[in-house]
Length: 429
Figure (cartoon, rainbow, N blue to C red):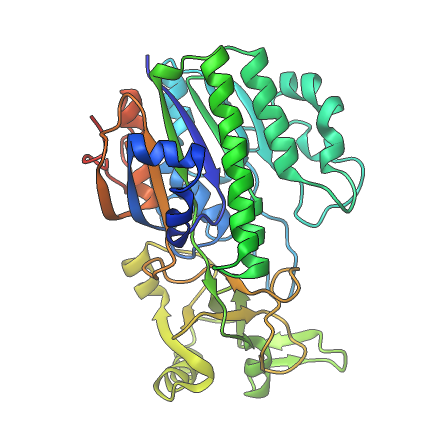
């Protein structure tokens, strides 16, 4: 029976490939396997929709996780999607388990309460700095894992210096020591995403983070060599999305306010709206108060078409809800989508200027790079694999991340049915 280890690096970019090839452990996978240079994310290329698409083989309109956050008009920092029940179709691990494979998922988003054999979801809120993260795992993680490892490693998730990656790696290594190697094991790391956000696409600090991930992956390889079934394991390294260096930012709700579509009180709190912007970082979703009102629809549509035609503020793309569905299989709380000609970070703030040089988004201070934009942009992610089910020496230019679940299933010898994605047949023996 084939086994598979998936090592996911959040925001692993196509541009990172050249450096990864020089490293001992990632380089070993390249030398002994095959890869896809450009794995296109789904739209929007945000972490949670992408991770769900990787695991289901489906686009957003089928799995129904359209954004990281559960968006609400006039409210920022809303709860994030985190429950397996939020996902409205099968996942790779569900189908694997039904086919008799043992399943393990460590720090994968939107898996709270999932019926995997071993599950420790990514579920502690991003801004949490308290000292009781156990409250978020209760009822959502496998009790056996909490009983064995939470007291040992829970401190990694506490306080201002909390580190999900330290927690993830500690659990991963202990599971590989203490249990038989799971038939399929997902391990998701976060800190490369933070490095790209903070420093940009090309920076020595990014390479330092890739060095650390190479060392971590090497530790996993050594434990599987010692305790597992190394020769029968397919090793997969993948990302969920790329990132792009940001040129500038737009407070689109401020622009809407200035043009009469939003009214606020003296403290810039929302009073009423005709059109409201939800930020998806490098794209913006415009929601109408009443999309059945043709006069309002036409007025807002005309406003944004003129911005695109005049290339004002750098806005270069406009899609209707219908176009978003047809072109990108995207559904959500939106009537229009806008995006910059170059990478622009969109804010949902009602305060400040309508355009700014140092973008701020979703709790991060000054970002150098971000994601959430069109899936065909050059800074895509990648998919790298080696093992007994993988061809050697094949380089494929482009695929979609929805192709990855059916491909992983094929590597293990079962089928993912009713997926939007297809098997990357050139990679699979």
